[in-house]
Length: 224
Image (cartoon, rainbow, N blue to C red; front, side):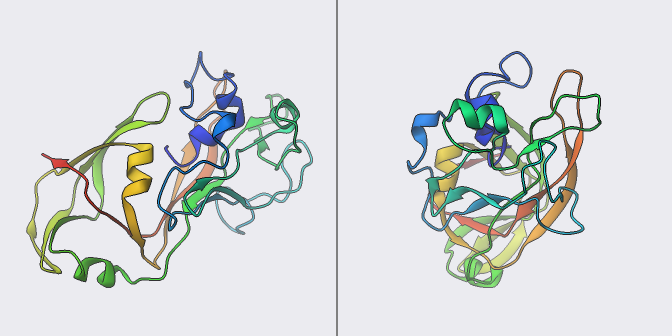
C-alpha cells in the first residue's frame, strides 16, 4: 500500500480522487529522499510464473523492472502513455486492464523491497531490546498512503539479541517516510504474497504479487 499505490502517476496527478484517493507524493518529489539508502522498492512484471507477470502492457509497451525507490530516493512512478505524456516522458509499461471492454489504467504488478546482505539472525543479534513482528493481524492506511498502522499477530520480545516470550498485539503507527527512514538493515530473504489489486470504475481486480525481505526498524514507537 505504501510502496506502490502512491507511485501511480494517475493518482499523483489527481485522477483517483473520487475513487481510491490521492497520493502524498507529487511529481516535484522525484529525486528526493524518502528513506534510508538501504531501501530499494521495485515493481517488476518480468518475473515469470508470478501473478503480475506480463511481457507487454495493454498499450503495447514492453514490460521492465521499475525502481520506485532507489537507495532511499524517490526514483520513478508507474505510467501509462497518457500520464507519461503529461509528465513529458515515455511510458514504462504499467498499463493494464482485466478485459478488452475495460479501460487500460495504471496498475502495479509485482511490488516488493529488494533483499539486502544480512541474514535474519544477524538483524536480530544486534538488538538489545525490541520486538520481532513475524506477521500482522490488522493494518490500515489513509487515502494518501502516508499515515498507517500495523498490529502484530505472531510477535516476540527481543532481548540482548535473542527471541524471548510472545508479545500480544504490538502496534506500529507511523508515516510512510518515517517507516522507510527507520530501516537500517535489510535481510537477504524474500517472501512473496499473492493477491489482487482493486482499482477502476467499474472495478478491475487484477492479480499481483507483493512482499519482500525481513527489515529492521530503529527508534520507532510501539504501543499495544
